[in-house]
Image 1 (cartoon, rainbow, N blue to C red):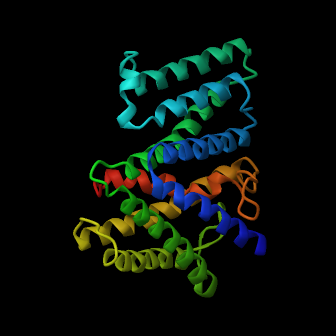
Image 2 (cartoon, rainbow, N blue to C red):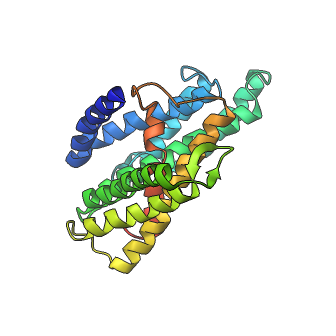
Length: 266
C-alpha cells in the first residue's frame, strides 16, 4: 500500500503539470503514454514491439494521434488518417504471407484493434485539452473528477455494502452496489466542480452526461479486465510499481474522453 501511494503521488506530480501546461510538451507526453500503452496491449498477445507489426502499429498510432492543428502535415503529402490506417491494414496482411502464417490474420486484426483502442482515447485527450476557446483544461479536470470520483465511490461503497457481483467472470471484486455508488459519487464530484469551474453547459445536461460517462468509465475498466483475463495477464505492465501499467491507469479515460465529444459537451 505504501508503495502504491508513493507511486501515485509521484505520477500525479509529473502528469498534472504536463496537462496543465498544454502545448507541445503536453502532446509529447501523451504520445509517450500512448506508445507505452500500445506496447502493453501488444505484449499481451506476444507481438513484439521491436518487430515489423509493432513498428507498423506504432507509426500508425502516431499518425492517428496527430492533432487537428497539425493536420496540414498530412495534407501536404495528399494523405488522410483513414488512408494511412488502411495502408497499415494492408501491410499487416502482407506480413501474414511473408511470415507464412506464423503471424496470422488474427494477429493482424489484434494489432489494428490495439492501435484503435489506444489511439481513439488518447487522440481525444489531445483534442479535449486543445479546444480553441481555451476551456480544454477545465474539461480535462471534469473528466478526471468523474473517473476519480467513480473509482473512489465504487471501491468504498462496494467494499462496505457490495453483495451482488457485477461481472464475476471478468472482475470478481466489482459489485452492482459499487457500480451504482461510483455513479452517485461522480455526480457529487461534478456538482462540486460545477460551482468551482466555469463549465459552459446546463447543469441538468452535465449531470445526465456524467451518469453516462461514469457508467462507461467503469465499463472501460471492465474491458481492460476482460482483455487481461483472456490473455492471462494480471497487470498490463509494471512501469508504475503498485499500480501496474499505464493502460491500467488510463483504461477508463479511453472511454470517457471520446464520449464527451460524442455527447457534444465540448
